[in-house]
Each structure stands twice: as C-alpha cells, then as structure tokens.
Length: 178
Image (cartoon, rainbow, N blue to C red; front, side, top):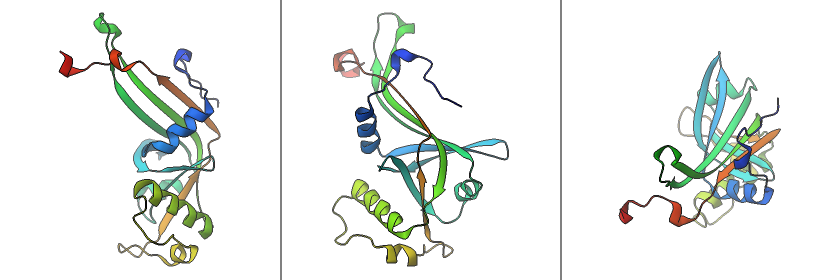
C-alpha cells in the first residue's frame, strides 16, 4: 500500500532535508496493531544508515507485539509555532513531520547493536562516556530488572512520507508581541 501525502502542497521530497530532520530530532512514535487494537509508544531513536533504530528492555508490551513482526509506522514531528492569519479559521501550524512504514526487526548481530547503541549515546549524551560500547558488553549486558538484556530494533522504511509547512518567524504567533 502506498502512503501518499494528501495535501500535496505540504509534501517534502528533499531527501537531504528529511535525513537532517531525522538525524536531529530525538523522539518518534512507534505505532503497531495488536489483537485488533492500536498501540503507539514514544521512543528515543537514532537515524543511522537509512534506518530508524530504537532500543528497550527485553520484555514488555512493545517487545511482545514486535515479536509478531506486524507492520509498523514511525512518526517524527516538530512543531515550530502557530501561523497567524487575519481570518481565525485560517490560523495554521508551522511544522515538519516524517512518517516511515515497514517492519521493525530485532537486531541480532552484536556488532551492529553495539554500533547503534553507541550512536544513541552520542546523540543523547555526547562525550559523556570515556570508552565506546563493544559487542561483548552488549552480548553480556543484563538489565537490573528481571535479568532482561537490552534489545535493539531496526526499522528500514519500505515507504516514507514527509510534510512541512515552513514560514518566516514574523508570521508565527508571539504572545509577547500582543
């Protein structure tokens, strides 16, 4: 199924801009379906080698659902502010969003998992740790809760859409200017 942006005026096809956005933002929402019900959870992620990677404990609802290999979507969204207009119904939002569609696979290669976890550390805690993660550490690591190891997932998008509404800063609502 092809996912299309219906309001094509907002369609963003600039791959460089999309990749920069995915690299910079910190949180996305992973959406899945389990037993006919939607389940969406915000997760920290890293965009690396054309894939979204995220991690978590080796147990829980997310892990249970992902073990069934359902189709998933992953949405990253950044709001820049409210766009003003003299007509109240024309007020809008300035934003960028990217939606990725595919299947999230558990990363079983410890080298890949260590590399991705290192990328996550550098994104969220740059230069905090003195030594890089190793595959041996990842293989042996166990969480203090229930003895579960950390799991890493890769979502290589089968489809991706992006939308944006960019405006000049002076077009955004500023309550201090009122």
